[in-house]
Amino acid sequence: MEIILTFIISIFCGLVITHIFESILKTNKKMRKRYYRHHEILFGYHAHHSVYGLVLFAFSILLFVLGEGSSALIMLGTGIGIILMHTISEGRFVFVEKQKL
Image 1 (cartoon, rainbow, N blue to C red):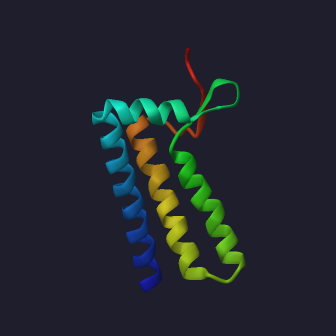
Image 2: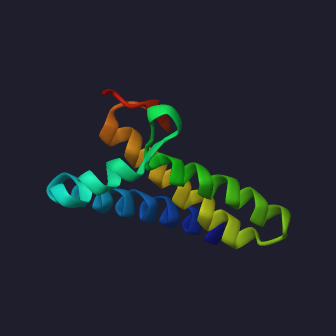
């Protein structure tokens, strides 16, 4: 039961952290401009912040292999929360997309 509770809390934390980040980006024009400029990668592609969730997901696999089960579970839940919140707010499941000029 403790494992399930830890997983649910970490998903909730990922949701809350992403919601706060997206709210700040929507209200702060200077930060939004800097964020979008720094997230253009090769050939004009934009990496969405759901990529952070994907990185946490991959990192959780590494932690699991190394025997850090509880840390892996927290990282996995947080990554899933980030991806879920970004998908809800964007209305689509996206990690990288071609930046419109």
